[in-house]
Image 1 (cartoon, helix red, strand yellow):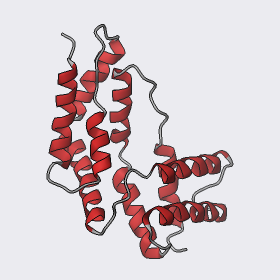
Image 2 (image 1 turned 135 degrees about the vertical axis):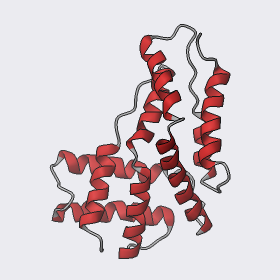
Image 3 (image 1 turned 45 degrees about the vertical axis):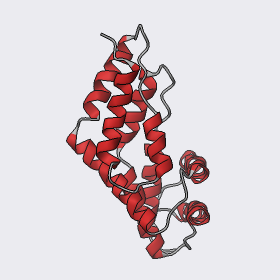
Image 4 (image 1 turned 180 degrees about the horizontal axis):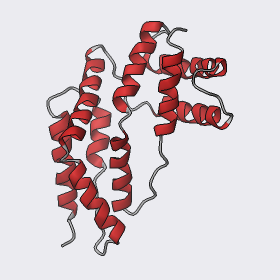
Length: 189
């Protein structure tokens, strides 16, 4: 039997309720998660059936739920400190563009050239979040990226795309891994 649209909605909403439920996390992010539901076609292909089974197991995995809960708790802590900035698409695009270019150009995260890229990236973050660049802010940003950089989260969205018959987005892991390493190598402005 093919899972219904209601099955997909319930699968995602139960997962979001369990991981974000009682926290004041970023409401735009929570709404985006709730709206991204698997909708199995009437005649699914084998890859869609496999993706549904994997997604169903993933959202029930205790370790994955704990990881997503940590992300939600981190968002709630940022909101408690006054962050009301939304989804941050512009700064994400800046990171993707600049880090992909740096990686293509062979810039290693610990190199002096990476420091210049990092200055650009942090300028984007400071413009978005209103924090000046400092060692303390870089530590906070590093924590933010480490908490969010769980490859299973990316897999979650790839599975949704497969089920819904859309293209699987390219992996962001190499970009954020580079950014994290650069912050570790260059902890002070």
